[in-house]
Length: 174
Image (spheres, rainbow, N blue to C red):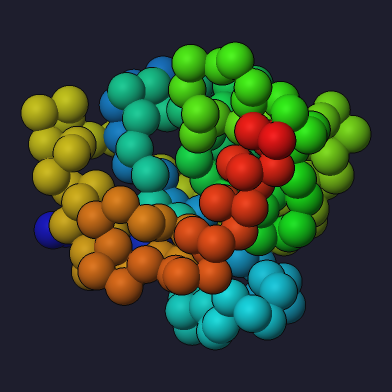
């Protein structure tokens, strides 16, 4: 998997320095990791030595990584998870009557606080991947690296993360 070596050994960019137009509108895989010195709450255990906390995919890297995962313009798995890990809650009752009972969002104030934390604490990198290979590559990488923030395809998902996400869903439904 020479192409995926570029994902993990390539040039990571601080979320705080990332420009949206630098992210291509192509299918690909992205990796999010903690900067040296940044940490998550202790109850989530030790993060991998390389700092990798999430691996994701997108039909458009710019839309998925920038707009959804890093800016919460639409509910996204990583953003919801990192908000839950940082002990934020969505607005009480905000999922009542909604079709999708998993896609909670945070208040505008909490969204800004989460985005600020990410700008200070996270690095990202991405690679272009052919659409026909994207699902298989993402799945294989998650199985191999077992990032804390990935639950699907992860053979060792975090029970603490699952509990934090459940707490957010239940709060938003009450």
